[in-house]
Image 1 (tube, rainbow, N blue to C red):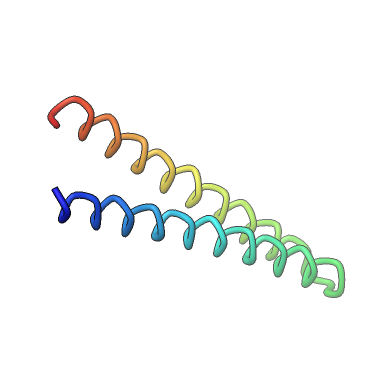
Image 2: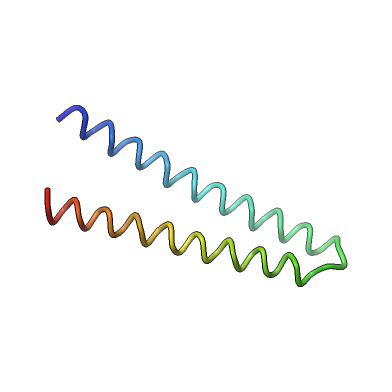
Length: 71
């Protein structure tokens, strides 16, 4: 079962990287929107980043459900 533990650890690291990346992207877009005149562009980028985050978390939850159900 050591391989399964490694895969679980790897998936946990990957989802934390996604979360950190989304947080950094939203912070970056917020700062750029406050200092730039093109606010709508950065609002759209923040919205797209949130949509990506929701989809990424959904995929991870479906993966956990599948592993619980089939494993």
